[in-house]
Length: 409
Image (cartoon, rainbow, N blue to C red; front, side, top):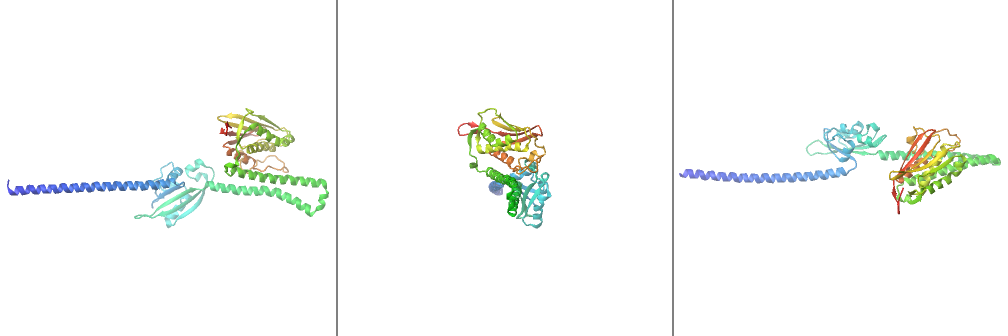
């Protein structure tokens, strides 16, 4: 073998060794790069998971849109509210469905400034999922702000908060104050007018018959003021949410019913009405606040009597086993409640206008509202069905509850 051949062979071997070494280095670098890339992806996934966890824990709907208005991210609250169609990749207007909700986003995109607005929508314009769980107008806080991007136009985050419950509560508060003020103003004005008359014309006191009549009217209206105040305090206690408001004890239902009838005996006798007790078991017990249950039955029977002043009204108090719980009913054969009024009878100060004389003192308008809330405080429910002139029935359903000693209704 010649020297040139030997040298060429050695050069070839050296070159091959160098190539193999470089390949090994490249493989090591590639492996290192892949490992770093995998670590980076895991870190990025962890950051995204943490971000998603934080945003999903947020109770309000949260969206992120890019400069073209396409949704790039949403949290679970947004998916629950704005679904069921996919949200990612759709435009803000498509997702929000109403231009009034999208207006803060558009203003923020045009000006770059944070923009917030409170929007009131009719039921048909609300987000689809909201229509399934609520009725009436809804109120929304829409808050939009830019999220700067390092190498692109800013994204915009959109916060959507449902303020409907707070809005409705505030409206109820305003209505309650307005109605209570009106209900108190009428009797107070009447009493004040008679007192002013007596002060300006004291000779009227010499008319014994006229004076007694006026004093009787004044007493009725001061009694009405007292009843309104008592009912307002009672409903405030029920709605306070304080567990100590209810003094839970086990008691016989029949005794509670008899106490209520004793309280109403003068009115029952004056109207020549009859009240029949038809319990499925005279030994049935309730576990609850006896004061409130007496008030519940009192308000229902008194309501039937006052709405039907003509003699001969028949009222029944019935009970029956209902699944694992109990059903109570107060039934009468009076003039009934028109179908148009049934959805509203448990609202505060709502009254069904009937044939009553203008001189007759009406109820406070809080009785049935107290009944409903007191029953709900005992985890029960109440409904009303009425065939005017035939039968009106208030039905109460109660679950079985655990007393300190035994299971009671």
